[in-house]
Amino acid sequence: MDYALIWYALIALAVLIYVILDGFDLGIGLLFLRANSEAERDLMMNSIAPVWDGNETWLVLGGGGLFAVFPLAYSIIMPAFYAPVIVMLLGLILRGVSFEYRFRTKRGRFLWDSAFFLGSLLATVMQGIMLGALIQGLTVTDRAYAGEWFDWLSPFSLFTGFALISAYILLGACWLIIKLPNDLISDYYTIAKRWGIVLVIAIIVTSLWLPLANDTVFARWFHMPNALFFFVVPLAAIGFIWLLFSSLLQHRPIKAYLCAIGLFVVSAAGFGVSTFPYLVPFAVTYKEAAGPDESLTFLLVGTVILLPLILLYTGYSYWVFRGKLKHGDGYH
Figure 1 (cartoon, rainbow, N blue to C red):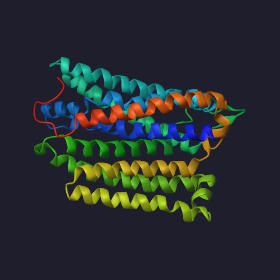
Figure 2: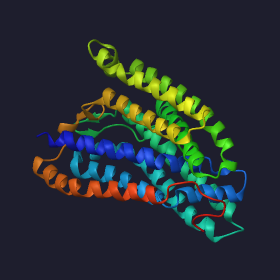
Figure 3: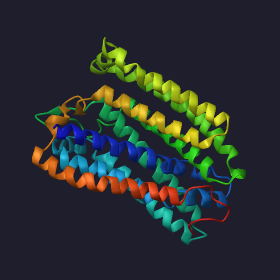
Figure 4: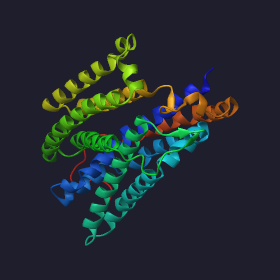
């Protein structure tokens, strides 16, 4: 049994779930300052109050799993991304502090509102930049990172940072359409449509930019017979895009939200097609980065027990707090 491949899939799944779940509450943070009133901002915050802590569980699982299971990859990736990881964590800390403190003050609430937006922006941009820099590939010599301190900063990584902003805003707007009272949601339909268009453009640009800049990725996507098999990925993306905008036009918010998630899944599949079997593109494969099978087996036993429990309590929390908020509802 290929335990390294199983862990590759588990960590990829954990990161994808984190991006989807924490993506909508980061998107709400990005939209926070454009709310029309203080009461609307309260409702926006209350829509994520029961679940936002649990959403970040998946970030811990992905990062911790990388450290425990693929120590070589961790030792390469972390030095490459020390600066953006620190900024991302500071952004997440700023979000958490502002989340609690804004309900404890009146005069200084605008400061915490701004801090919530700033923390969301920093976390989102840094995540997108790290993704773009990782896809481009890291400089590795003798199984160690050999690049410069600011190698993570490039035109492509900056663009992927902006692309992730558009993706999270789309998710956040769709979530707010589902959760806010009906008299507050009309603006968010407009926001979802506009930023959905921006995201579609960003996906197209990224899908062309990366293979044109990297011969390995180009060969993976456009050489036969691979192109015949992988053509399903852009076809699926086109299908989800069409369903997304038709759902927004028909005012079917849950379907629109699920289609936005579908775009994330298709994008993750595209990332996998472009980089597999590399865990550190295009230098270290998942097999080369993995620890001994004994360690992987031991950790897998605990994960098989804990992962269903995490999924159960996550699903239960969303089920308990389902439905629309009413004016004045929620956490204070």
